[in-house]
Length: 354
Ligand SMILES: *Cc1c(COP(=O)(O)O)cnc(C)c1O
Image 1 (cartoon, rainbow, N blue to C red):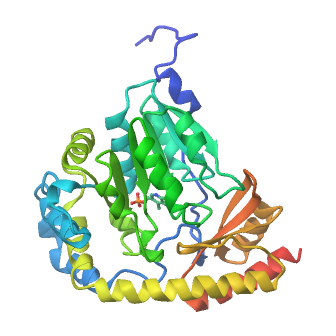
Image 2 (cartoon, rainbow, N blue to C red; image 1 turned 45 degrees about the vertical axis):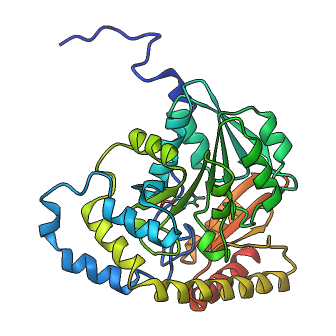
């Protein structure tokens, strides 16, 4: 069979040529400190729930919109279930929200540096990401964010990859004055000792995104959710579509939110202690790690990519960043049990000495 010759027309959407496939190095590595997941492992009751569910749970479809999970999450957040939307990871919720609140061609304002997936989700949905530098690499510039006039404003606090909390007054101003929707990504709020839930009282155009991939140790199951006004949440659910939280994931998430809460709280406390201890170790090496409210530490380091590559050969993976605005090259290190942090320090000392 002959196909017509395509000389100047690609079968792909033209705008997709601007999308880079998200593909950080995930080659298996003995000690992987590159993705900020729970390095203590799976919460025990969630693990048991997965075993008990067995194969029988997968012959039928899961619930359409994870209603049982929504109920549990609502109880935990102190809101009604119609204020919760779930998804296949919070990535799915973020993608669906961006799509729900903007028409193709509209702008999405994103701080820079921040979560690398957001510009990709914007372009996947035909939207234009507008990067707004954080002052000194960490400080939210509310005026500059608002000046974009963007239909959707994305904020992340604690911010990935810098680790800092955004200034509460600046966030509140953006929420009050934004012309459209504000998405506040709180993937790491469990490690920050607080969240921005109070802001839901002043705006019905605020969506707080959370995940069970980090503190709750369920990254491989892909469970995320968001909290917001019922009308907002309903729009995200429409954009998201049915069956996005699979049957096993919903069972494990319910167990984690129930019987595993103490386990999660204890691991979070340990992560916070080890984060501070890791910061002190780095400062003792004449480095200047950024203050972190998350379960990772970002440390500026010229030539970070080469150091990370040498560390990989030594069996320790960390995430390198190149030329972050106002920060420069840097390494992001996930925090876990101290034994892993000790392995990091050993490999780092060897790799950085080259
Ligand atoms: C890890 C991460 C997510 C994604 O979480 P999933 O629920 O696993 O999709 C979202 N936002 C930020 C800032 C993250 O670092």
